[in-house]
Amino acid sequence: MYLLKEQISNWLERCPKDEGTKIIEDFFRKIRPYLDSSDVKDLYDDEYRKILKNHPTVILINSKYPIHAYGISMFHYLRDKIEKTDNILEIGCDSGNLLLGLMESTSGNGQFVGLDFNENSIREAKCKVRDTGKDNCVFYCCDANHFKSEMKFKYIILNDVIEHLSDREMKRLMRSCKRMLSSDGEIVMHTPNGLNICCLSDQTLLSALYFKITGDKVVKSSRQIYYEQMHINVKSYRQWKHFFRNCGYSLAVKYDREGDTRGGGVNVLKNTIRTKLQLNCNMLLIAKLQCKKAKYGGYDEKVIN
Image 1: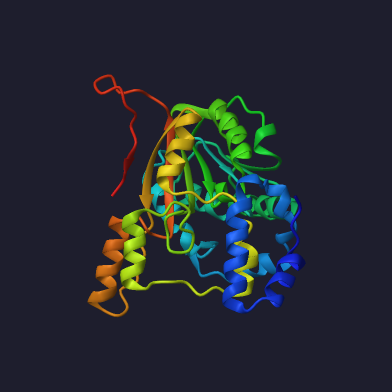
Image 2: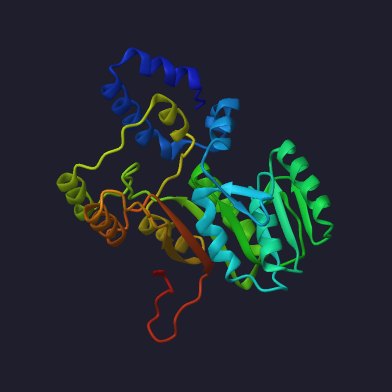
């Protein structure tokens, strides 16, 4: 199956806006399990990259390394955990801002390695490394599944990557990560939450009741609909936990805080409820090599507050 932006545009133009949106979303919800990343590669066009560049950003480390605002939870989590000798691998590193920001903010002297498909992004990342004058950060343009390294990494980063890969591609990637991850290491992933108001891939009775009572909904533009189709694998924490367990990992989650208190007490209350019901839009997933608990025979899986 091969999907083009023009096809989606034609469908939307022929349908009333609300009805067209529903038709497209229902269609993609049904076909997503059968898509690979290659099926939607034409949607990664210049307009998409322009949209990404216009996202709200947070500037890291002396105004040198901007990252998207929704990636700040990844930065804070790792900055507080990385020790000076830890080796770090980022898969899908783009132009290296997150990895370089972590290297400078932690003063780490372990190895920092970034991988990405895009040659232009890797070229830009290498220029930034030269400007730092440090020799413990390297970038490669390659497929992570073909990356050969004898080094073991304490942290493997997948920042807004896994939603772009099918289950089949994810299983292969997790096998590759297993050979590179240290025994006490973590795979840290930021991804949309399939239970949130935009996706609802795993709606529960409580979440359905919340949306019914509050009337919360998201009005999407046709442009948003184009690019949401590149998110071919959006799951809830519960669904990812089951997936990673079958791949040999235990899983924990840390939900992004929505942080919107506009409107006073009502919005504060709604955000509190959304957090309790795990409806936050994005989440940080932390995977570790599976280890049975001797006392209970279960696995170390939890929600991090």
